[in-house]
Length: 322
Image (cartoon, rainbow, N blue to C red; front, side, top):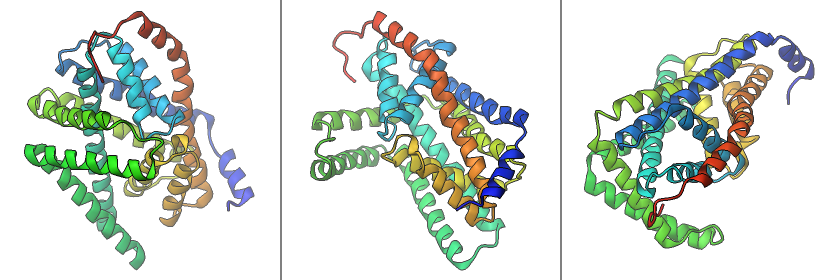
């Protein structure tokens, strides 16, 4: 679909020195993510060195890019490294679920702000206005649900239990080959509820990790913004957030590792529909792909072997289950 000459001209306009910007934003994102895990672990009375947590963060996230399981492969890798370092299975699960809950809720509010800004500040066509209104309503509903899940304990327990039942029935009917044992699903929903209780019981201790998670999202969005700077295009923040959120969400739910192709296509489509030149959007999104996925994957290779060697040197506490 791209004009070859325009595409080549866009690529040739990139200044190599500017490519440092998305890489730097990526590194800052991983530092913030590791700090958030370290803070939650500290709240659980588990001391963890920053350098070790940073290595685990690189490897666990890279597992999500290699194996498309909606984030579960990275979750499992993180639990493995945690438990092999003497952390009980329950505590390791709680730390990961607590961080994941804060991460997704904060992303939801970032997306909500982006849609709200777009709705208020940009003149949209009738079709785009209707679509934006519907998506804005969905975001408000999800944000409201997140708040209710935090404050209404009995409702939360019931909602998580019912969701686990639906998930079990759905997978039993449509995905029987991939369906985990029912006891694993019940254990997961119990640990999820325990993770939220953990957050609420340590409100003040969760403030610093929450701030680090917000910084993580800011830096991650900054990778995409820096990618547009590399092609000398100043993109509005609202358009940037919406394209970022849609592409990243589709990459999470895709059965293709890292959402390869789907993320690039959806991001490019969103940006192009909002008046960003097609070739510019293509090149910027590909720079984002390299900085956000490829570079961390290559970096994790330097940590992978050492972490598993260290993991085998540790022993899981007896009687612990994840």
